[in-house]
Image (cartoon, rainbow, N blue to C red; front, side):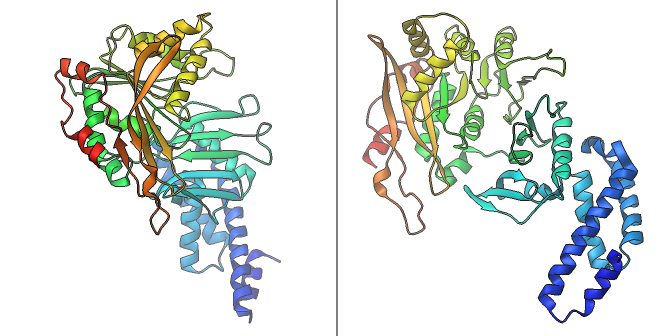
Length: 448
């Protein structure tokens, strides 16, 4: 029995709900058939970049309308229009992910397999009813995404980091490393990047803390932002980078370009994986070394996670003040341990004391950020690196998050970050640079 006959048969189904469900299943079947026919007819043209777009879109629309008319004549006009839009998204866009990528309230999309998609909204994770047709459909979308930035994914290179045209971060991993089908994770970036006022509104910072951090950046302190995955490190790094004066030459170095700086004199560098022959790889460490020959006023590294840490510390210690970077760590003290470990990954056989002296001399401030269970992201520590005492790097907390305020009726944390009342030693350096911290920030926060 043809699909049209099966659709017609259920028109008079007395069980209305069963009829609707059955009709939806058959509509999905029609969509899959048309989708398959469209791909077979247009072939490799569909793998062109969406940015090459208008002529391909016209071709797809014409062929799609033709297939809808000939293969699904029993459909209503509304169903045909909906079906055409759905398949156009599948072919020209990113399929069932399109609606989430266009939704500004969705911050992350997580595809566990072709039939299971989760999203993050407001800092919390929710399941969705969206699905890919099958594993082949999911793999085709992944290949389109990574192909647009000149990368590949297959059995020989089964995991990849990439980005969407809007800067959103993409990670994909496929069999044999991924069990039960390909996995795809997209961390969305806002077309209009968050400003310091947005972070104040979200509760990440207070106005006083924002003024303090602006003074640290303008005063050319070396700053490390730490936190766990998804704690908002890159967003905070982007905001802090906006405090850099517009007359300075800024070089950003990232695995996948995410920072959205608005200054005029910005040079963006991006690492490159090896090609299919195992050649051509350019690492973050290579780019950090190269950046030192590009006359930078500021070096901003998206994240240090390996041997490039040594080069970054050496840059900070040789006149490149005001550098910014992020690192995964659970606390400011853990940052120091992580940095020591990553310096040793560089292959240089350095004594631990020498490594710690490098760290203590290079870094002025550690800003630690955490994602709370209520979904919010907050700065919990602003810590000064004071120097060495014997073989230990000494730290002192300038600001700490106050958890004593508890939770409100909705389960949201009511506390905020407050001064410990300790005057940081680097205030003298800021004064020498002609930068003043608003005089009431530390005292006011201490009284609060």
